[in-house]
Image (tube, rainbow over the protein chains, first blue to last red):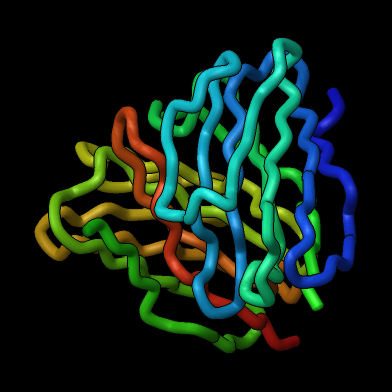
Length: 116
Length: 111
């Protein structure tokens, strides 16, 4: 079956702009979580959605937001971009969410965001 | 706060040897630990999960242990191959909570 699909793969934005990233989970998966990965901070949890409801949220400013649609597809948005937002943004899907042991999560290839 | 530390940023070993990666956690024991492999420019791929009440798990050439006394998990790759070269991430998990990932260890297996 198809894996987790993230679009776009690469993008360059200017400081102050906003960006929307998209994630299509594996068919049948109801949980989508988002992570930011940078060389300095590693992989950091942004938020998780399950059946269109935000279930967990990481320690990121309100400029980072997300949503999930009825078909489980998810988007995340970053407004008023800052240089420090340059990172690899990873989406992961799972059947029941990250809080359940034995519930494997599957990552997409990520969206590389560069803010100039 | 919950933290995960992986004590080596990078590890070089010779092909055929056993690679041992360490993951240490702070505060209370997580319900489970997971190990992932990440290749450059790719998303992490799940390898193994071990629960708090399990001492050891194996999958082919991979073995992971969980020591709640030492607050530590060890990840072993036996008979390592150059194709095993990648970054390996440890993540702690608790029911109803998001994962907390460690910084990763970049493993290089030299031919």
